[in-house]
Length: 406
Image (cartoon, rainbow, N blue to C red; front, side, top):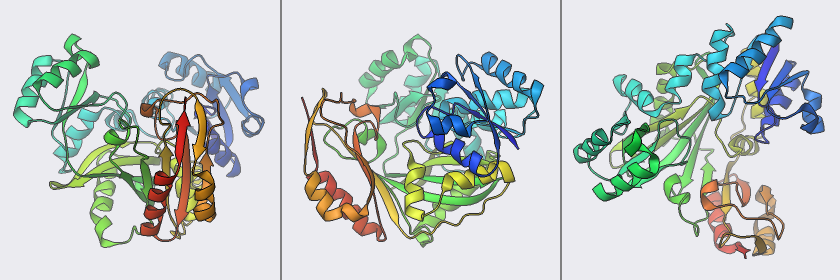
């Protein structure tokens, strides 16, 4: 099978999808923004062909590259796994008559207000929301729904450029900062109190073949705004317990409504006083290398089974569910350059057998701001057979390790 893979080199874990495609027998044509000579050796070796373009999100440029490839060989699939690439690739896929995720599905998984409108109409419980470029409509929504509200771009990913608004005065400030006051379209949503998590799948022709539940501690908006917190994302091996049946049912129904065929998915949810609420879904894997956490927890290669789904139309591998696993972000105490660490030897002595990966940048490395994300600075991945023991261990690591900057 001839598979075009869009942007094989950035971010770094894109190479894992290419590796997996090669392992299951695909002929891989990469389209990326870097010169071929800049790609590291293994990645270059896995690619059978390569086209460099100025931008993989410029649809005219991408179309010309795909059309050029189609002049010399049949293209069975064109795939992308990065949020910003999903919709442009879907449009090129449709224009070039290549099977895969449709423009409609990609659009509904990208535009948050349209997504929620479609799901509410089908009976999925969502926060009240609108998409608007009208400041007056935003003010009316605030008065009608009540505060707090969430304001973010219509195509936001994670907590990027996201604001919590607690009153009329803050709304006026955010309308200026977001550009809404000048006509920039944004999404406004009712703020939902409750625990936040996500539900990830690998889906083949609309059928969920692999599924995973991950919890945020604390919720994302707080984690991405508060330096002293060492936030965690923890995936459970208790998926069959009754408490997860409602969210599993919701996720499967959302996939059906949005007509997601063969793809990874990443669905965020809240559970609180108002019950279970859908937040948003992406037609892609989760970020921050979370699939590596699933691989460690389940002792299998999820990337390989994604490639099996793309190339062979089915999956073969079975997750062990032996471990719960998670990642904890360890923030520098200030912006600047890494000075050193406290507590690493103690953590290694107590929990070293359970740590499966970690990153502690060398002294002198420039720090990244808190809002840069969970993997921007130091972090560790941990697994353990017991979910509650894992949570305790991660809390202990957060209390023990100190990252000093100057």
